[in-house]
Image (cartoon, rainbow, N blue to C red; front, side, top):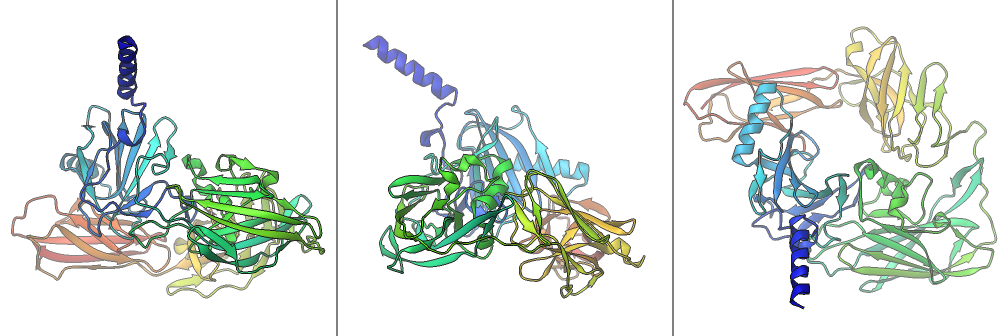
Length: 575
């Protein structure tokens, strides 16, 4: 018996040493001195991506200590205007990579090393990799401080765990690594039914029919109508739902949706993890046209052609429901969050006597995801849709449309060319070429713009050469050639001659009317210094890294938009 116990203890010790324990005990909490509340969970449906981690509230302030969740080393430090802003990556001995995003600053020695690299390369951004010997860490070692950098709307820590070899992102709540306080079941908001028919191999959808939902009790929902839902020969359901957690007003994503028909499971969506190449496929999991206008998650209880199978453990007939005229069937739908709370919705369906028959205009063209297709509008415009860019086959009808109203400083230089509806999700970029005669003085400022679903123009980019503008985009909408003639706006956030000897930073406000800020450069007394951009705040900031000398200095900031328009700001200060 003693020999068996010794072997068991030895085996457990070896497993722990090799990092095989990836449960709750293998990690410590990544941020100190916070209330352990959350603002986002893993796998939420975001615009064009699944949320890759969890967002931990930092009590509305910056500067909370961030610690290594396990033994390993700091393998990467990045600084960017968008995305995670300041971020640290830890390669852990247990085979995982921990990612910390939106930091205010790194630990002093790491901050100094990154600063040296920025000065050496004269770059405002940074992406620096380190080997295991440079910054080894033990669990609990401070690595940086929480902040609000990058694409962040408030102070918080974005935290991820990835499998190091594959970089597959892991659901840290579902795995029990992070345990939020949560006994609240998901909320089911609405039910939608979409009938389909096939035409030339393309699934054509009838307009969705929507049904109200009410809560009977905690975790139990019913339709507002008593009679069965009328269904056609083939169709599927869409659920609009969200989740919540104790102590916060934020809404969260659904972990799992399961559906039964007459007691038999026929569909399951589950968010256990994904690799980065699948992140954009959230647009295939959702019912994209509805998701665009909803604050909830709008999940399709069916699998379209190019939606990845990994998200669907159960899938019968691609989630399609078939009913004969007059046939009555029972549907049960269960929504579950990542903490195990569940809500259910049950109702009857009955086959209608009428049938939906697909029809499209005679000029419509079928686009198929397995083919490369180039669409043309005369000699003026063409759009190339590469293989795999679409999630399913669709019909389109290219045409010329009226031009939208131009924002201030923007000159419209072509009609609007329509190829794809704004409700068409794209996994890969499509390539656009639009011909136009552009006055020579506007050619350097010319680019492509796109009319969004609200009818407003947004910048795509591109370069005008040989009589045409060429660009790529991963969003759909009417294409228009424009010239952006207005330079960015920039101003110092300190008075001329201000005493900044006790200030931590030099701050400027900066914004642009259309094409967006593409580059910026700051010098002090003629010497280049690094400058961080905070796009959500509309600021450019240089954090002082030398002692104050009580002398006068001159700061000069240059800000350039994506069309090459540039603004300069110069101001003196004392420090």
